[in-house]
Length: 246
Figure 1 (tube, helix red, strand yellow):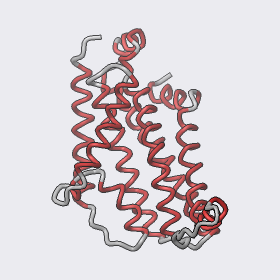
Figure 2 (figure 1 turned 135 degrees about the horizontal axis):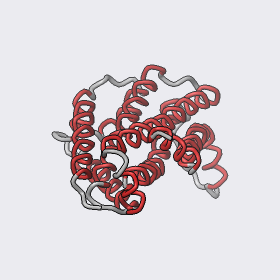
Figure 3 (figure 1 turned 90 degrees about the vertical axis):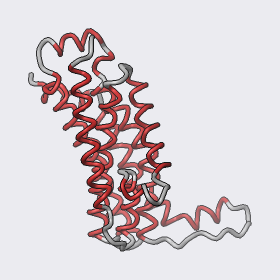
């Protein structure tokens, strides 16, 4: 069995791919439904108090999907990627793999397939959210949805590259995943600075709502930074793992 086939089997049989599809798919349905029925929900739970809620719009429905999905989705992605990339957490498995393949041969299928599974799950659920929104409310901006989804997919790939970097720093799966989440939160906070924000990969998340709302594409800097930092993180992780003592 090749390392590529092994990783595909691991993603399927360990239910990791289904966890990602399930989380994003759930919010792909829930987001538009929440936006559509929010006035009724508030009216039933408001206890007679007058509460103003925004009208249901396609933009609001897609924003609900993104906001809810990424909160839990990124945590799941970090742990799923850490399980694959922090293979040194199990010394016996690490020794077995290292004596039969090089570090690039070990890591390449793990990076590629986990990026494809994670970003693909988000894109699939985004399509679900689009269809549910179109049926329940109105058709969202098609071009904005496609481009915005691809940019968020790039951000997810960056998050996995970051996971690989931390996997080369610490050996444990929980530590790798939590460091990744912490770094992503820190980048989001730094991104609040007007001079820095447009250059950070975290700006790609905001592109989703903005482009669906009809905004202009102004994310070239964030795209370039995400690509460069992802490549650098992967290169550093490979170098560090090649020189790590098991």
